[in-house]
Amino acid sequence: MAEPDPRPDPAPEPASGPSPRSLAADGRLRDHLAHHLDLVEPGLALYVDPDGRPGLDYDTPVGPASIVALDAHDRLVLIEVVTDDAADAGLARLLRCRGWVRQHLAGGAEVRSVLVVERVTEALRYLLAEVRNVELFSWTVAVAVHRTPV
Image (tube, rainbow, N blue to C red; front, side, top):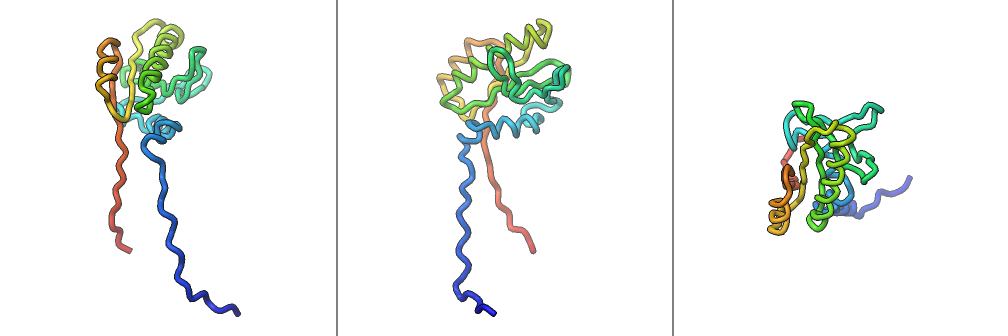
């Protein structure tokens, strides 16, 4: 029978979870929002097209739409989640997709647009002041640790 190892167990590796920036960059925040659309607005639901394709990373000829949803009044809502350094490109993608969705999915009806960023910069505020019908949301990540009785 082998003798027990007298050395203490090694300390666990430190948690090296994703940085907030990587959450948006790699799509995890988008995926989380798509499954918890009430974080953006109560009553939102993920859109599913007549062919059964869900509105997550929804393919269009002008590029993928991050999230296509329906609000409580059955109006289409596009949601684009971006990192701070990609806000301009994200807004351009949102507007391109909005034009396509308005023509091909909404029958010409207005499509609501939501841009979700980590930090709202002054430059982004100026940019959005010149664009109609885009709602701006910012996101944060919080972690809480609580003592749990055993």
